Image (cartoon, rainbow, N blue to C red; front, top):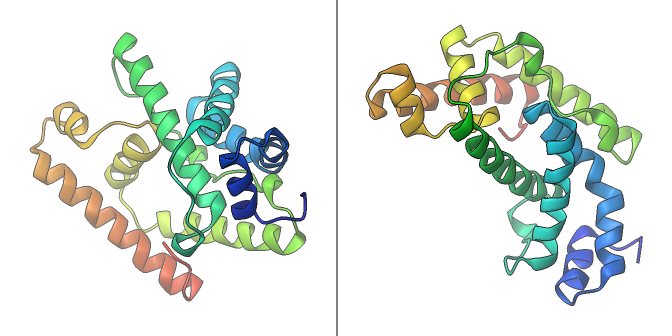
Length: 192
């Protein structure tokens, strides 16, 4: 079973085979924890997110489609959504923006990679992302930070920045276009 693809393992999880869930846990728990820890900076909260992700995998009716992307990307989307839900819940208690720090630009640690080739590829992608960020203004970086890592909705950001929703959407769109252009130019086909 350990040699099966992530997709095949997910099919077994749908049939409620606990061993399959344990295999995915072994493969991806550190990736999920790293992502949650980076976003939340709280060890217990990151552990709770890991548990929530695997509970979601066990109970969800939605399916992973390998034709739409990599399993790890799908899993990180679930992780990101649960992390944002956690952040929003916490923000209701402690309203306000978290200050942005430059070292937060570092991406998920490479420890999840399963091969030396994956480590090299991940390091290259991290470097490309850092280089692409150099082309953004501080305001664009803050907007990306607040939207993607701190989980603020566009409506919340419009209120916080005291700007029309359309302006915030446009600024986010422009920042993403800049990142995409520089990632594609630097990575020769890296999907942004």
